[in-house]
Length: 319
Ligand SMILES: [Zn+2]
Image (cartoon, rainbow, N blue to C red):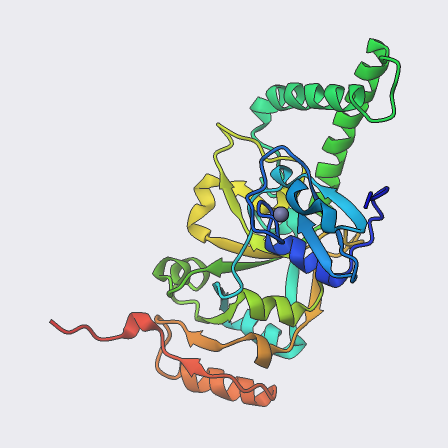
């Protein structure tokens, strides 16, 4: 069966399937070669498909070509253990609002949020993408006559300008909730987020629970890729999942709301079922002994019931 124009009709299950994998055909498991487009769409029963040429014959509706090598590998296994370290005031705000706070990307405190790379390498980046766009303009389907060089140059320059503007705009229309992916507690993160005498907690969840709690397939959840901007650039897709290598200790998984028309807002709240999302609340190892009863009674006051546990860092050694 031949498939026509792409319809762009992503339903929830197709978005989920697409988010799960980039470089493997989801029908036969074959590795999808780099720089060969694959396909997202539906089979004859309306089931979602994410396939390469190997299984394209199963597809009756093409939704979109996927150029997965444009995307960084932000896959995050559902069982990934996630932590959010916060001071006590933020914890109370979480209980009170029963919502997760998403901060506007340009407000997260990292100048490089959403950046393409170092400013002093901009000329290199521009040259690379100019060439890339020239090639795309020249080889666009449906052309029989070769295009005038002047036209190609003008179009390539326009596209380059456009992606720069989009990059800048995205910092102000993308909102992020940051998590730390780690199988164990991190002493470093306690010191970073709750440096004594600040006291706080870490709430624990998993990627699957966070995804379910947010319940919106348009919210992208994925691992941050740490890039050495001396050697590489961020692409122009999903830049919000790229950061400088010097921040790799954060081991971040983030949930990102893109294209949010927040305008003046510096943050947005998304309601979550805290009791379903959070598996436990860990009290700071640096907190005094009266802190755990306070965490418990505060949760009670807000009608939230969750296990509160002592920090692993307080465990006693034996020799
Ligand atoms: Zn296949």
